[in-house]
Amino acid sequence: MKRKGLPLLIGIIIILLTMAAVIALTIADLSKYDWRIDAGELAKPGIIMAGLVLSLVKLITRSGNSRSLRIYE
Image 1 (tube, one colour):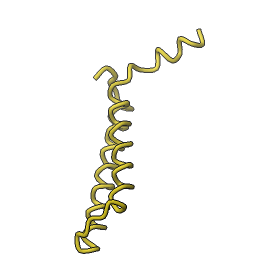
Image 2: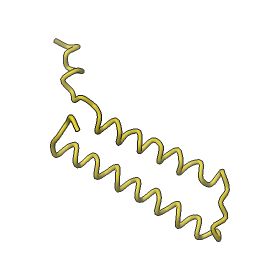
Image 3: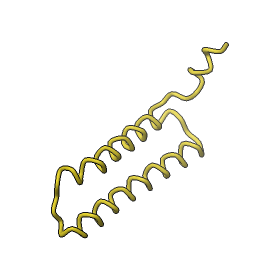
């Protein structure tokens, strides 16, 4: 990890908790309907999970805010 600190840790924890909630709610919804899997039912949680994974990767691999501040100098 290039960027360290408390904000990074808090961001990772928030994203991981959100991912766990999406998975738990998807499993609860599938068990409610006798585990019938339909492509339409899994599309929305799949898109949400893809966005969360991409944001987690972006959060971990970004180089910091020094590059964005060079524009204003």
